[in-house]
Amino acid sequence: MRTKILLTSSAIFMAVLGMLSTFMPQEILEYYGSYREGEKFVVPAVQIAGALYLGFAILNWTARASLIGGIYNRPIALGNFLHFAMIALVLLKELKSNHGVEIVAGALIYSAFAVWFGLVLFARARQTGK
Image 1 (cartoon, one colour):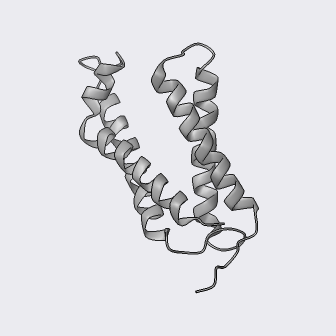
Image 2: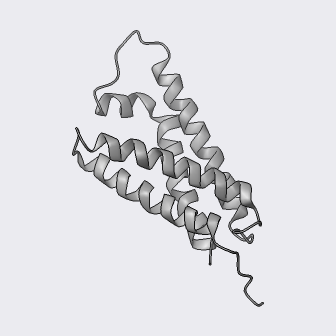
């Protein structure tokens, strides 16, 4: 299974989310109506989440040329699978009460990445001839 497209696309996706969360946390919180003056930890919490996204993005970007699947680079596949699967579950649960376009799009994107990383994680890796 070719993983270069998977790792590249997930790296770009997470880098965009990470940059926005790190450098525009107040704007994001205001857009969703969650920003209140005086709450001291909400903005740093969003920035911390952004830093985590950037860390995952650089991990995927640097591993994109490596063989991943089966026993090869299993921690990378496992970490990504867990990340995307857990957030997909949260967003799918949120769909019960909130049908906003961001929630629907997020649920679709995260579910697709979760399935794709699940296939990589639980399938045998195939080396391609060079």
